[in-house]
Image (tube, rainbow, N blue to C red; front, side, top):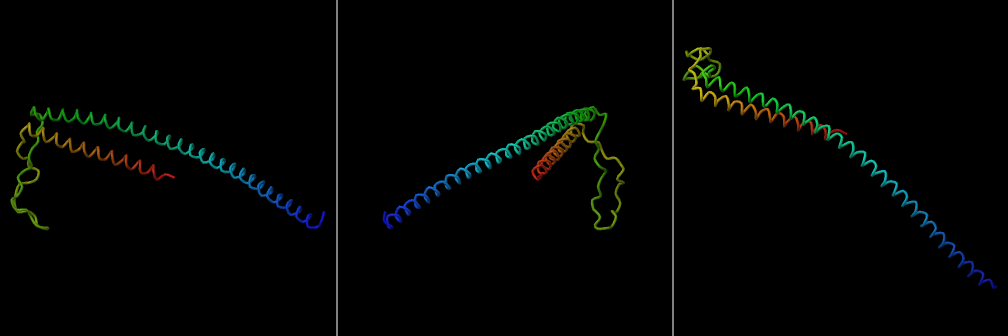
Length: 167
């Protein structure tokens, strides 16, 4: 073999060796990359499942608390309704009565000056017609119910907001 043939054969062997090495490194690297990727995805899924289970437990606990509060509020609303009915019956029967405030002076005092004349605030005014008094009690109870429902809504919002800000 001539020197040129040996150089050519050596070059071909060297090129084949380099190509085989590159292919081996790529195959090994791709396998390692795929294994690392699969491990990271599995760990991420496990963490997601743990977080989801914790969130569902927190949600179910909060729902249970809210159910209990709703049941208590329903019982209280029933008590309030019964009390209102009893008060309206007493007013309609004439046992209890609502009275208008005593007369208010025609000219109100301005600033720090006292009012001139007029009746004392403790004097009872005239009685309100029983049917109208019962309506007034019903209107007052309706307003109080709205306020209670708004306060319960506000408490729920605060609990949910505190829950969402938890780390």
